[in-house]
Amino acid sequence: MTIDAANEELYREAAKRLNEKITEYSRIAKLDIQDRIAMAALRYSILALTTEHSSSLGDEDVEELRKIEERIRGYVKK
Image 1 (cartoon, rainbow, N blue to C red):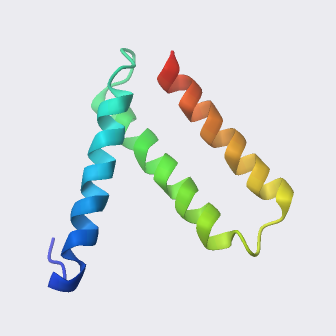
Image 2 (image 1 turned 120 degrees about the horizontal axis):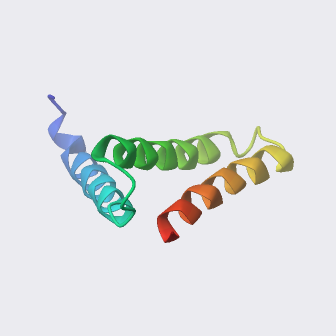
């Protein structure tokens, strides 16, 4: 992957956060690495979409996204 030097720190921070989430999900014995990566990607996708669309989403949509995120967190706690 080639990145612009001006964005290097952003990419490093994103990779760090993703790795932290994957490590957090590793506490779930039932999940293999693909599942952990998928859950982390889904979590950050939800956060990005929530932020991106917060002005255009209705309260019900935002609440539904929060419920999905809570379900993901529930899996982590088990």
